[in-house]
Image (cartoon, rainbow, N blue to C red; front, side, top):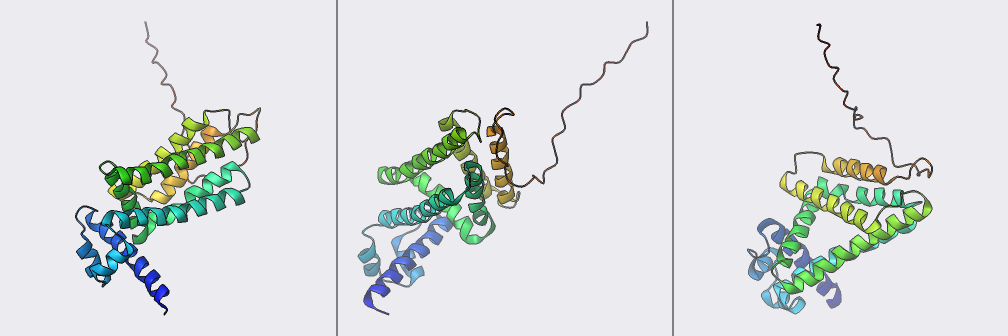
Length: 230
């Protein structure tokens, strides 16, 4: 292994070790010494790669966002229509709910935003992608409106609703991981969201995903008033 390869391996090892420690104990309760001990590297090696613990924290955020950005752009480019794009993006989150690495990612997301409330540098790094994803979703919805797949709704408001839905379900997955099959809940919720966006009869919508496995919601029937005999 060359010197450069060793440096890259140490850099990635520190990121992976820190991610697990931050998810387990929180950012504030995790020190550089603990990260170094778990990774089996010296403090000198740590500070060679990251000047501060916060710099490592931001590097974790940027690494995760780089992968997510590339995946979302690929899905959008290869999807046949806006509906398929949004459904496939929701499916992308399924593994996050199902394995320990995914749970670590969810906890880390909320750790980023928890730190963002207190650290201006983290806030700047965290809020930009959050806003960027809202704009990204709004653009997809606008394309759906232009193609006739969606009704002429407020695209920005709809994007905020969709992002809020996803973030809310991620939070529920952290709070109550065994409370539901959150991947299926997410798919069903996004499908319902898309059904509400679907164009009206005079503007046919494209087919939206597979049929739902949930039972249909029966309309409430009005109770007949009892006739009183006089």
